[in-house]
Length: 550
Ligand code: B12
Ligand code: SF4
Image 1 (cartoon, rainbow, N blue to C red):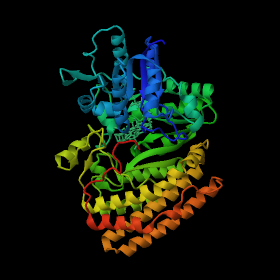
Image 2 (image 1 turned 90 degrees about the horizontal axis):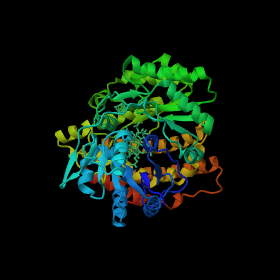
Image 3 (image 1 turned 120 degrees about the vertical axis):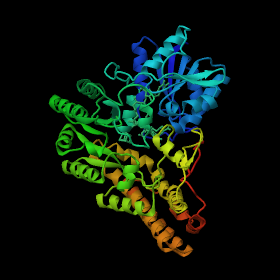
Image 4 (image 1 turned 90 degrees about the vertical axis):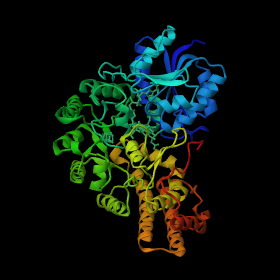
């Protein structure tokens, strides 16, 4: 068996494997590194254990079939325990490859990872293309690599983090290799594309910012618009891709040049007459004006995710969003006027949540008909300004990235509301989504983003159930409640879930329901919710799960 120079691995997030019919995403970071390695004359392969829905042991077996000089794991936080176990299992089986990690969590938690996981030899901070390629070259030639900028490793039991690397020149990179596109495309109907890297925002909670700060160079770098559209045209011709998701953290760069970059991409798409195209991406409200929105719609943009986060001006200021509520409202109106759907990024439970902010947020969401998941709370990632802010206010409850996200102290009343909502959502409402995920994914394959009406109907069902639950919780903590109030509300919720299920079953043409809602115990759930609200023992928004095989 030929030894590869490098095996790039996306680890399985679920150690016992995913359900097979899920919605796989292209591993864009590894695809760029793969292309760069091959261009530099190295042999490489990607093993995407997540896409293949492999268990941990199956992943080990697949890795053993592909011996390599260097193994590179792409690490996001929830997959970190899998990476630890995989690296340990490989070393215990006598694998001598150099094991390196990269990606967001590896970058932001490098010191912790190297201190806690001896089976990992090094971490590359920031973008991996250039540094990983140099590492592979050095390992192949048995030369030193410990002086490379952007590398972290152990030396005499101590973690060394070298000086930061320079950010890559985005126009000098090869296009990402699309070996995995057919698998993803078959299930999702879209391809991803990256027109720029980084974001000029300074939001305190954002790990993109923290990630960008670990290397030297501009926080936003746009690719040549002609080359971006060449890549899209090529994907359309070779793979029949008509639907593209832009993975850039922000579709716009800073200032007039950043706006021009988006305008140039749109004009390039329009002038080439690429035919049917359906586009979506992420952006900030302050970049949207009528002219650019009209042009984006003409180019094929149908859905935009805007990080609104909160409808409370004071919270926006504390987050350093750099946007007023007025700007947010304007952008929503403009996008709707030109016919672009909005997916709102919203963090209703955050370190600054109060009863009043919850009421203002709910009111805003109702006014605009937005339907985000309500039972989620802001997560604090290593390296973000918010981590420092919470620590300086003595509110940070530090957690190892191997175990979960950091938590933060909040008012016990808010924590109780969150935990009650979370419990009801996870145990009942979310079961609806989970049970019918296959149908939802089937429906999501509708070709155009703005034709996915059935999926939106399902989202709406879940949202309305959560919203009504949250409203009851708010009214109870303000005006008082009895165990009987809770029993009645939970019984009503049960009826609604039964109806929602009937709706989904008939909408998706299923023969019979799979979720046995009738067996749900109203008194059991009501008893636990009553106890959460009365005892107020929570002080944070804890994870429902620790990182484990879930
Ligand atoms: C697409 C995407 C996903 C896809 C991932 C597909 C994939 N396999 O890559 C899916 C939907 C699965 C996903 C899941 C999640 N995501 Co996500 N995701 C994104 C998104 C929109 C784009 C990522 C991307 O393609 N970037 C472009 C490529 C080129 O960059 P890259 O992947 O970072 O790779 C570069 C470097 O990181 C590095 N690198 C990466 N891997 C490796 C490996 C080695 C060996 C080396 C040396 C280097 C290296 O080199 C690469 C090339 O330069 C970003 C937002 C953004 N635009 O950045 C969020 C983002 C990365 N996700 C985020 C989050 C929070 C999540 C979830 C936790 C969400 C959730 N609640 O479940 C999960 C985590 C899953 C997990 N395993 O833990 C956060 C990161 C948070 C953090 N600090 O970890 C981001 C930044 C969004 C945000 N602003 O909050 N995500
Ligand atoms: S605008 Fe979005 S990507 Fe940019 S810093 Fe803020 S949260 Fe991060």
